[in-house]
Structure formats: structure tokens, C-alpha cells
Image (cartoon, rainbow, N blue to C red; front, top):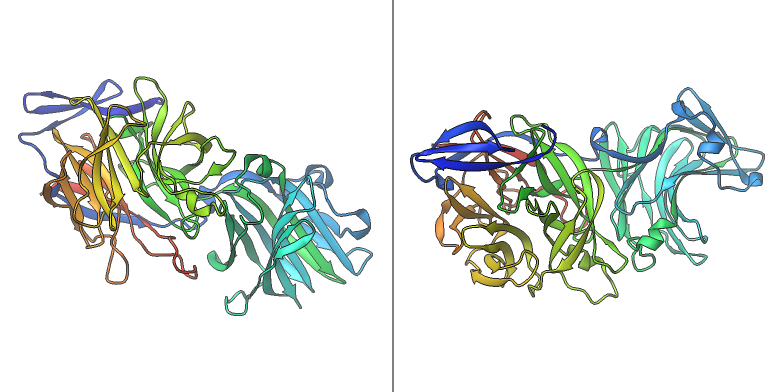
Length: 535
């Protein structure tokens, strides 16, 4: 089946029949109510994606072996008198010095997406040269860019430039002597993160952070009209008797340096969607600190561990900015067909000079936002305070929308809110609880819903729904933490119909940050699959 489906249930006496898109796919005998603290979860597998090429969603690129007319497909923006000599040979773009002592090329590759990752792979360099990734304003001389500098055949520096109104307003230089970049074959990577960028060098398949910069005080690339006029360029600058061989240039949406904040995409009652045999999740794609991550979408066949990066979602509040919010819960409304949900307005941290505060936002889209690059509209739900991690359901029995979130109340603590509407009018009905909380979830076990959330005290708490009374703790064998790493993880427990290896899975994350990032940063983590069964 290729349409979007969801789990539903009919209870006949003590037999619960799971329905999939209206078809019976399995039965589960339940003689009594199930409590989540009766389930034992055991770790099955773990994976962390770090710019995995097989997971990249392509935007643009230059593949020398598949380029027929270089100047037509990828025009050079350097004046003819200053141009280097470029030719295609043996799967490489070969750039050599021209008639002048200093020769350059600046090839158009594609458009600019402020949430994408840009790469140039260097096959080799001889002499003294620089290879770069550059973002040019097609309407002015403004640009952003990173260059990998080579001296006497060896990479020795990376230089960033923010050039605005004729001046270099930012120009940090990072030395490579401490980064063990030994060979000339490497990848220069710029991870754009809305209000800034992270610069990496990859050698032998391993990515190393070289430097980082925030530029939003000089250039607001999240403005749709600004980003629209910027172009992605691949550059090279050579001194006399030098040569550069470039194997490829790419722009893609990638899963970043880590993944976290996992939530199943559901229907309005909180039942996970199953589309063509795959569960769907919102997962944070890591950048650096809180203005830099973005909202990713992943899928998984719950019988195995074949995580697939599917897309990226940004949010439009109608003010001209595309925003990188995160910690979202999305659902497909079965009555309207619209995709809706809630997210946390972390982009407010990147709005220097704007009077904004982080808040819970209602989001919606008529287009399915799960694949590719999607834009969802967003507006505040009207809950005051810098709260986080909303997870909601429509309780058909009570005729109410319930929203479980981490309330900013002397630390983040779970609280239950209620409304007659999915996108406004919420009032608190329970909590905040007395313990640290993160990663809230409302999930049904048997015939009852429960509230779950992680915590800093090495516990995943289980509370009653909707009044948040203590019930117990989730049992996790080999949990995704140890003495060296934090424990504020997201439970993300999902019941499955019969026919799968286990009646429950949980997809959790650890909190191991990417090495070399400045403190404080939020660049965790790896994704952990657990199977759960009744003890």
C-alpha cells in the first residue's frame, strides 16, 4: 500500500484487533491493561550519521565526468583576463594557472539554501593555491565564503570571509597544523546553519571541525528575498605553476553531525503513521548551538534498523524569514487531510536586534512535509513562557486537545495543557511536575494513555494521563547514557501490531556532542533502537 496509513484498534471482549488502513493485519490478545513500566526495553542497534553521503538529499553539484560543456553548464564569473585554465580530464576538473601570475576561477554551481551543506572534494594540489566555497549576491559585490589554502603542495589554513558593502567584516583564519590534515586529497565542507556556518575538513572519511562563524548581524540569509538572489560558487585561486584537481562539488540537505529529539509523526489521536511499511519521525539535525539546528524528517522500517533521512522542514511565520525551529510533533488531521502540529521557536535565539522570545508554535501545511525541502506555516499558540518539547493528541473521549510540554518553571518540568482547539486556547490542567523533564510523549498502552518523559536523573518517568500522577519508570537495558554523558533523553516509545519482532520499539538518542565544538553546544547524538516486550 502506498497511501498514508495509521494504526487503529477495535476491542472485542479481551481481543484487540489492530487495523491498518482499514485492513486487519494482526491481533493482540490483552487480558488486562498494559502499563509501560511492565515492558522491558533492550538495545538492538545504534547509529550516528555525520554528513553521510548516501543520506544526502541533492540540491546542485558539478560532476566532472558527467559534464559536457563546462562553460555552458557552470559559467565562470571571473573576468577573462584573470581566468585560470580549466579542463575536464579523467573525472576531474583540472585548474591551472593562466597567463598572469595570479589566476582564478569562480564557477556557478547552483542556488543557495541557508540550511544546506556545501562541499568541494579536492583530488590533489601542486604548488600554492586555494580552493573555496563561496556564496555570492547576484545583485551586489557582497559574498560569504570559505577557502582551503595550500602552500608548497600542503594544506595549511582555512580562511572565512564575510564581505559586505566593499569590506571584509569577518575574516577569521584557522591553522590546520593541529588537525592532522596530511594529504592533499580532502573535502572542504561548509555546513550552513541559518545564522552562521560550520567549516569542516574531511580526510579518510572522518570529518573534523576547523572553525565556525555567525554572520547574521551582517547578513540575514533567512530572509527569503535575500537568499533568493544568492548563488553558490566553487572557486580556485592559483599562483604561478600551480595546479588544482577537483573531483566533485555538491550542495545537499544532509543529516548534519548528530541527530536528536525523536518523535513519531502521528494522526491527531497520537497513533503513529505507517506509510508503505515505514514509520516516520521528526528528528533534530544538529548544527552547533540553539540557533543552528534544523528540523529533519526520518523514516524507519520497524522490523529492522534502516534509518533513512527523508527531508528538512523550515517554518514561515509570515514575516519574510524562513525559520529553523525544532523539537516538533507533527500529525496528519484525518478530518481535513492537513498536516499540523506544534514546534518550539528556537530560531528566536538567532534573531539579534529583534524583540523575540522562544515560544510554542502551531504549524500547518496542505502539502505533505515529510520528503525533500518543505515549508510549514507557523503561529504562536498563545502559551506564554519559554517552554519546549510539545507533544499533543486529540482525546476523542473527552473532546479535548491535550498538549504535554516541558514548562519553563525553575528548570524544565512536564505539564499538561488542554484546549477545545488544536492551535490556541490552551490552559494548564496538570503540573508542572517536581522533576526535571525533557522529550515529552503521550502514548497509548492497551486501553490507557500515559505520559512519558526523560530526565536528568537517569530516569525515564511514566505518569498518568492527563493528571501526571507517578506511575513508574521505563525499564531500559543498556540505556543510551553512561558516567561520561548526560541522561536527558527522549523515550519515543511506539506500540506495533503483531507480525513485528517485538510489540514495542523505542528510538532514543544519546547526548554525546560532536568533538571540537565551542561550549555550550547542542550537537548530540546517536540514534538507538530498542525492542520492548512484556516481562
